Each structure stands twice: as structure tokens, then as C-alpha cells.
Length: 103
Image (cartoon, rainbow, N blue to C red; front, side, top):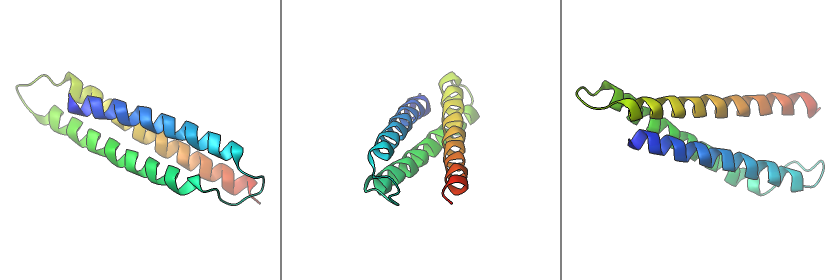
């Protein structure tokens, strides 16, 4: 149950953080290299990915226990895995886009 709750909360906060990053990026001066929110947004994403990894670990632990209801552990493991893969995929996509068009 805890894995499920943490994975839902972390996924929602990662989504909100990406929205905040987009809003901050729209407001920055053209051709500026950095904006002050980059560090905060980056640290927030890293922290939330660590929390999501914790949720995945708790999901694995819940699946390995015998004699208990494992549905929330399985759902927590699935949601946290999808969130981690999606977030890392978006980061890689953004880095590829930035390296291609920054020249």
C-alpha cells in the first residue's frame, strides 16, 4: 500500500515539476544560457526519481512477501517503473534535442 501511494505522489509531483520547468523555460531571455530555476528544477527531479526508486523497492519487497495481498505492491511497482522510465526518457530526449539545435 505504501509503495502505491508513494509512486502516485512522486509521479504527480514529477509531472508538476516538468510543467514548472516548461513555464520557467518560456519566461527566460532568448539565447540565455541559464536561468535561476534550472538548479532547483534539476534537484527536484533527481530527488523525486530517488523517491520513485524507493517506491519501486518497496513494491519489490511487497511482491516477495508471502501470505499478503500483493495488488498494491504490484501496482506501486508498475507505476514507479513507468514513471522512472518515462522521466529518464524525457530527459534523454531533451538532451538530444538541445545538443542538435544548440549549434
